[in-house]
Length: 231
Ligand SMILES: C[S@@+](CC[C@H](N)C(=O)[O-])C[C@H]1O[C@@H](n2cnc3c(N)ncnc32)[C@H](O)[C@@H]1O
Image (cartoon, rainbow, N blue to C red; front, top):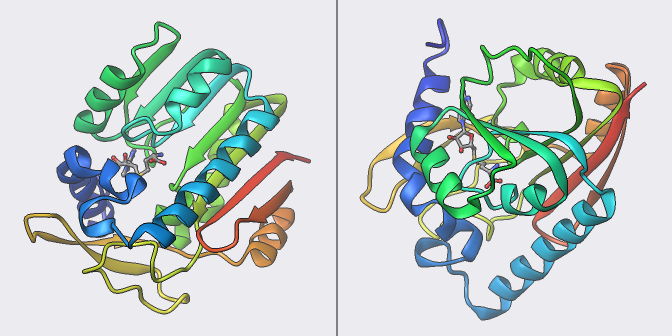
């Protein structure tokens, strides 16, 4: 599917296999349980991002890329007129549809690196996806977002900060400069995937150079989130 890049296939295979246990990460359960203090910090910081997304008012025609199990789809579906939710994993899409159960949501099983929009959106959202875009596809990915947006359209994204307690207890976190890492499932299977950690200031500058005005904020430990528009 991904031509010369085997990691992209491995990355999708990883998420397909992980779909049933994916929410343990967000809910800080199992291998992601870091004890009550850190779990509480994680949850509080997640709420800050959810509040920022509510304040952003993702209304009208909304597109969510790499929607996963629906952690954000649920919130987006409440304010969108229509929500198109894309993911390459049928397992993720099935969990998402069962959870969100909204007639406003249209699900598309697509490879984001091959998919092209045939309509435009008022808002494009992606959660914990930019960090999985290979560095050499960064510009192309933002070109896709530009084509997805109607004039005046806006983008919101959230992603990981580099914090050792964000990942599973049996995952090492490589240095911030690394762009791939190994991930393990509960059953011990291992996969190599992309994971790019961005410095907020450098990411803003990089996006400015591509013709975006994006403001990025950070929570204390775990998350960064950006809002903006093409200029
Ligand atoms: C880190 S998860 C993020 C899920 C969700 N946005 C969230 O915040 O919880 C990455 C998602 O990207 C999907 N994915 C991986 N490779 C993909 C590809 N090439 N095309 C579309 N989706 C892909 C996975 O199935 C998974 O649902």
